[in-house]
Image (cartoon, rainbow, N blue to C red; front, side, top):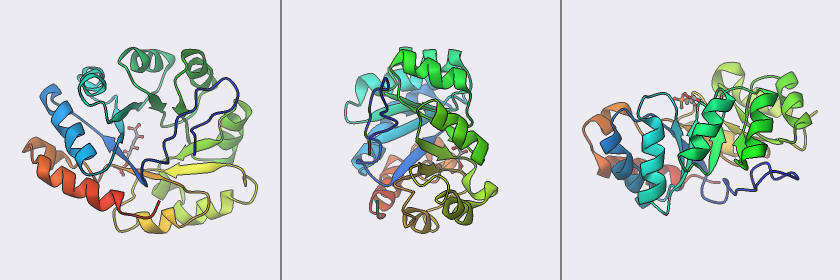
Length: 215
Ligand SMILES: O=C(O)C(=O)C[C@H](O)[C@H](O)COP(=O)(O)O
């Protein structure tokens, strides 16, 4: 499925590359490229690098330049400035934890595909109004998880979700079994302690496990 490819938005296939989008926090620039290479080696190409650290933008830039098989995007996009910075860093898509029309419109202007975060029906409607129908449900487990996704499928039958927040290798299959969930997100593929000890082999194993889940 193409990501929010309504008129005016650049389509990006985020679903055809596997069932899980890793949500990544990188503290050291030197870890960016080997981490991305380890994920790609495990079959995970779509990478959401969060804008939560001071080196995040430089990490995205490094991955975009050095790991051509990775499709790198920016997570934690909370402002128009963040979206612009992500585009400048070479990101192919952006993910926001919530939704603001100004971010939706700015991403359209920037030709930067956006996966907007929503947690309520009103937010789904605001994002739909602005042309977005593939949405991130965040924080997925905390706001209602599978029962909420089943409920949303009634009034929002044409909306697809990437639930993220509180999902694990064990619970991901139940989310992916829902007709309105083609892909889910999670940080379990890139644990902080594994990155800290530069155990890239373990990252590849975690990626391989995730990529084998049913898409
Ligand atoms: O930083 C952002 O913009 C986010 O979107 C938050 C992440 O999606 C979640 O923190 C991932 O949740 P966990 O898999 O439970 O760790």
